[in-house]
Length: 119
Image 1 (cartoon, rainbow, N blue to C red):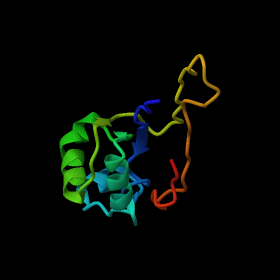
Image 2: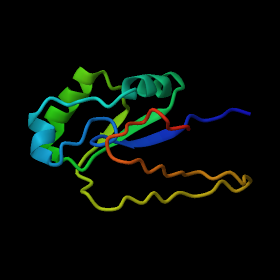
Image 3: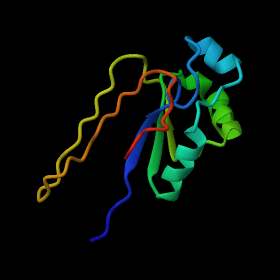
Image 4: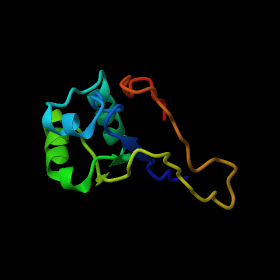
């Protein structure tokens, strides 16, 4: 039975990079990669997961954000920008012949990183 790769939606600021408190600082200051983020991202990439980064950063910050991610050695498949700071809700369908959930949410305290995330 072939298992399709998982898709991970992962926030950037406060999850991968240290959150400095506002967009201006996130864009103008050198990003600080949180502990073990690079190792976790490499692990997910090696497992073939689809990595979709999401952020409240404005679309006009795309070039700088892509540069910061590249310089930090962060692998990803897509970058979705401009989500704003409100609650994020994922709605997904269940497979007809399976009891297994098809969506999971993991909420992390700001700036602790993804080291202990088990997927």
